[in-house]
Image 1: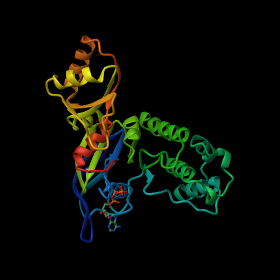
Image 2: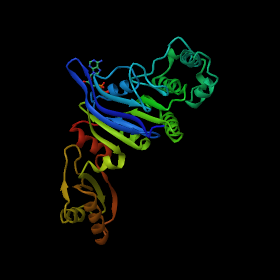
Image 3: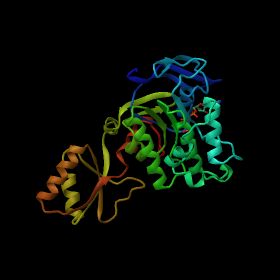
Image 4: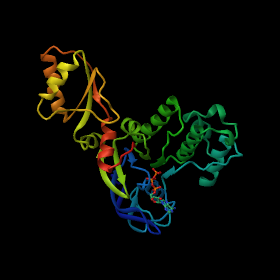
Length: 308
Ligand SMILES: Nc1ncnc2c1ncn2[C@@H]1O[C@H](COP(=O)(O)OP(=O)(O)OP(=O)(O)O)[C@@H](O)[C@H]1O
């Protein structure tokens, strides 16, 4: 088996005048959960659709599971974009059985086991018409798992799920990767991506602006703002102002209240301040980044003003 589940070179996709993807290069190793993130309109859905064979590239090379993607998608690839397609008048069990027959020409023996795996066995006999968004996502995931995919491509798989459901879906995805499959998921939830993914690719305006391990993405944000609450805000302000490479700032939207100060600088300078506070006997009650580091990196690299 190729060490790469996905190999993309100079991939371009145009819709008329719109360049949804403009010269994307990307390697996704086998056996990892890989996150795709980016602002609205960055090209994530377009890329997922190309991987699933739902559309064809305008130009460039796209190899999946060691095979070039041409008129057909290689065996072993499954998933959904936007939302899973279901037959509303059929029950959950009937939906999966029908899909299994369509795909393999025979009834899959493991439909109930799959429904159990995604937490839908209790509602197996209910028509999917009445399913919530979270239930649809789970059934879509079960449908994608029908053929034991080696590459699973999913769009916001935890959309609409409560915390327990989200945990269950995350577990399914990480178990798949632990068994050697590759999972590519698109999400706007940076905390989900941080919890799930080995590596992430950040797209902006149809281009890759970062690809690699999450911890490296975090370092891309450079200086962060940290909110510091101490037992003695006056002393904390004085010590922070005297710490090299550190500035005391008040940011719009993050006003400094009378107990807290906000400092901006690299991590080692914040460490330095902590040592100074401790040496002066100033008790630290809270210290943390104002914007989570992943979100800060997202904003820095995409130049977005809004949240992920
Ligand atoms: N079928 C289409 N016809 C015309 N333009 C399209 C089509 N599909 C996508 N686009 C355009 O391509 C660009 C990328 O869209 P895409 O849906 O891939 O972005 P995205 O990153 O998935 O965004 P979102 O986070 O909002 O889902 C956008 O400018 C979009 O308007």
